Length: 270
Image: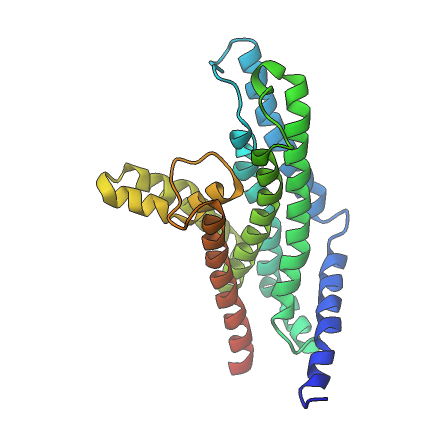
């Protein structure tokens, strides 16, 4: 037995206890569960329902119908930010209400807290998104065969979305925890995420020439869309969808690691 084994022996039980403690905070009355999960499922379903009904009634042009690779677009747009808001507010709230000091006093391994939040909120986000994608790809082709008839959950594109989007949700959860640890202001963090996703990465499409194309191809969220199987306007600079998703994952891990480093270092130096 090595000298470090007693410490390592308490690592897994300690981390499991931290995850259980975090999960215990998420009751049916928690906004992340009571409001976040239903909204994350209902909003993309409602948007797709309204669009499908409009197409059926010839209110909008739905020529060509829906493809599998574009069927989960509104999940990526809405569910992502509904679900990540829960973990951002939870993480920032630890600093705002002072409970983080109690956690630190009870558990000397400071990195357990953000890791437990990623595990719990990531599992919620992954499960919620998987259910939403499945309902879309199974239910809508039966309700609207004329426009959704080509959408198949158990096709190659469908399986990639069904598996890729939950993984993406876990990565975004990690990104949210990292940002909320670096900047414990939930409104600011969510604004930054939205501005980057729908502001900066949209703005770069107006940059002309090769520079604009290069910037687009290196945009993290555009690569994430490509990586999960969503229809994309860029080609991957990382060898394909798997490389693009790995690139987005690396960005999330770096931000998360920076947040953990700040949390540990701040505790040591105060």
